[in-house]
Length: 83
Figure 1 (cartoon, helix red, strand yellow):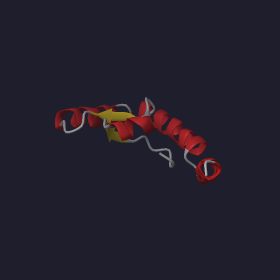
Figure 2 (cartoon, rainbow, N blue to C red):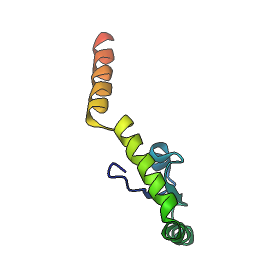
Figure 3 (cartoon, helix red, strand yellow):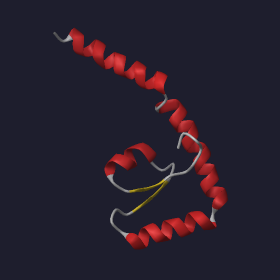
Figure 4 (cartoon, rainbow, N blue to C red):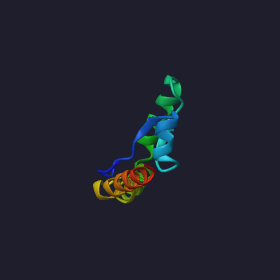
């Protein structure tokens, strides 16, 4: 996602939490659905590229190192206040 590529993930909760509706997913353990989603993505490169651009933006805002470091520091601060 950080390179502007649109992922295709299984629909497990951990993946859905990250991609929301900004990427493609297939039903977990469903080969036919995986095939259908791959075919769709290959036939619709403009849509896939647009989602990839959105994904890159999302990663920059939510998952870059400064953001993660700031969130981690806040967790540590809260935990140290509880003692």
